[in-house]
Image 1: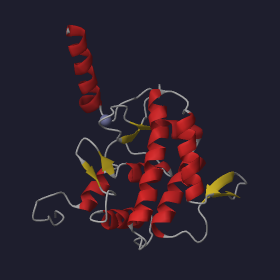
Image 2 (image 1 turned 135 degrees about the vertical axis):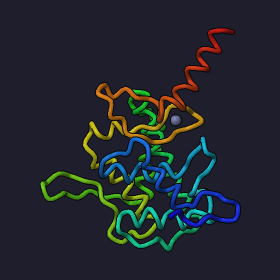
Image 3 (image 1 turned 90 degrees about the horizontal axis):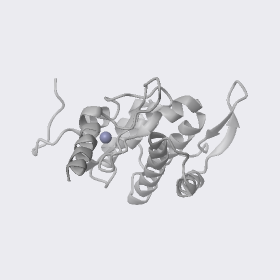
Image 4 (image 1 turned 90 degrees about the vertical axis):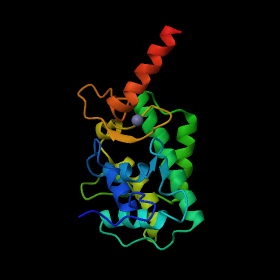
Length: 205
Ligand SMILES: [Zn+2]
């Protein structure tokens, strides 16, 4: 059965959240990162965290995927923080796709985001240091903090396989399972084809 549709026949928010992991999904814990980052879809023209119209339902779906309650602190200030964390991480994942170390600006953005969500360091049961959200973090803050904690605790090889599409009109996050780890586009037949067409046109000119 299909989810109920609004009068404008726009896709349900829940369907769009599910779509985040429908293409080249990442393993845990990085699928949380992919889920948050793909709440924005430039090609399809939506951002589920842009305002309070769609954000509560979107964040409720994200929290539910982790067995958590829907956030109640979903105001413009917390949404703004979450969007900042989301785009800081996207910058890092874009560097992965370009095969380059992140530049100074990316580092500053990640550091500022980590400071804003008050991450601290703990040890996991095996004794490995991990970044953890503060005990009292709840709702939107917790989602922001856990996103940053996930990129810290992921295996380095897996982390480098999590990438943002290099098409500046896209930025969709995907997990690169190629042996050479050289994937740069979310989908070859979408962004890759577009890039090839542009190269072809510029050669013809
Ligand atoms: Zn793309």
